[in-house]
Image 1: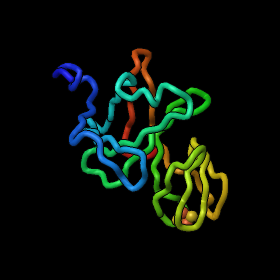
Image 2: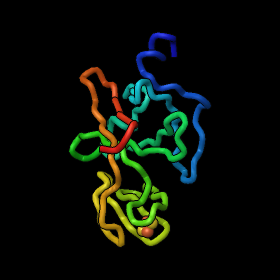
Image 3: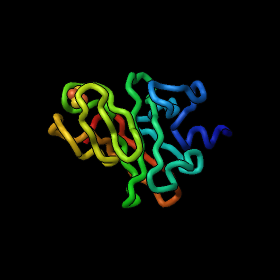
Image 4: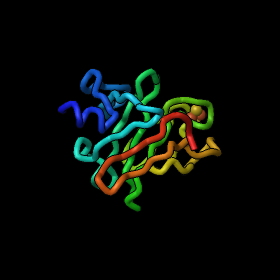
Length: 140
Ligand code: FES
């Protein structure tokens, strides 16, 4: 990545790819002004419906999921279960909580309790030139 692209993306690959608690790798990113910018060309998984990646913003402790939905929308979700705070994992078409079995759809909606609330979302948009922009300062 040349310097210009580095600055444009705002996403810095700090240590390459690390492996988190699941088999899905996590990309370390550095927000600029609270925004993470991910060029789609660097994350081809997100160009297809059902694709997902995990990102860990610099200074954070819990990776976020970035998911391409069937509608074409790209969403960014917190993996913190809204029941009692365990970390959910993306398994197939849904997020599953290992603690008490709550299940969430890929858009974060509740599919099965005991949770009663959807996963937190972070504002996410995709520009016409293929840049995914995520506001990681707080959920919306
Ligand atoms: Fe997730 Fe209880 S903490 S179901």
